[in-house]
Image 1 (cartoon, helix red, strand yellow):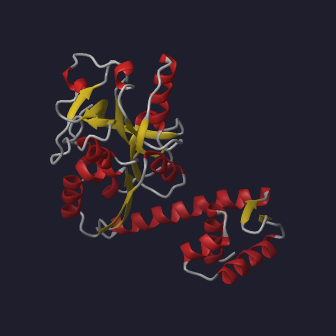
Image 2 (image 1 turned 120 degrees about the vertical axis):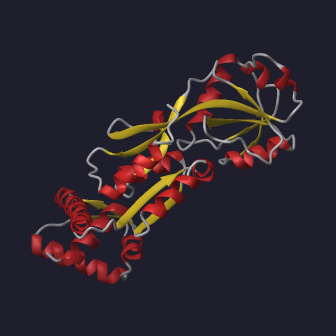
Image 3 (image 1 turned 180 degrees about the vertical axis):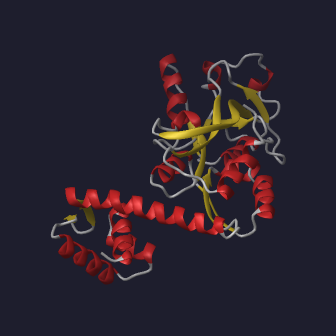
Length: 298
């Protein structure tokens, strides 16, 4: 069994596609297919089954080799980090993902400080939705992710970072901005700007369930997956919208908006560091967590 064969199999099994795996490993599909065929001949068993024209499925033997390959590649990465540490070098890779708003408002100073302390670490920072962050962490593609604690499954570890609370965004002078306690019935009277439907945006489902329980009609004037975009259209008067705001998150500075707390309807949540439970951290990765968690508000 050759090293490149194992890497090729790992990516093919993970991505479920020769095409995607070839792109990820910078090889041709033909070369990748030949490597896996050679593995199957050496191990005397079928590793992958084709489903239709493009999809692949692991056999029972393939699942065993998948677990083995994942462990070997994780240990290889860990070995590289240990060797750099022995040499006295804080050198390696750090892969992070968080939603746009978190990266835009909360991460800039943290990353700036980290880069100054660890200039030899190669950073990879991804702008992803909450659910995408969690999926990438589970797949082992990230060292850390930032997502709402309530969304993280129990098989992942979480470290609380920032307390977040639900607020309603309206233009200044809006009738709801004058109310002492805004109700869902009152909210339903105005056009709403909400995230798209689907598992990536659970807040939409929670809100609609609350409105349906009341039996009120409501109108969604716009779907937006980005709170910055939503705030722009709230400001121009298209509709009203919701956002989860961290205690250290500055409100959009160039927006003329009113933010109404909605804690009487929605429990507070926490923006948390999410990682795999089997994750072993090199010193330069632990240092990132220390810098990040200095900015706690839990």
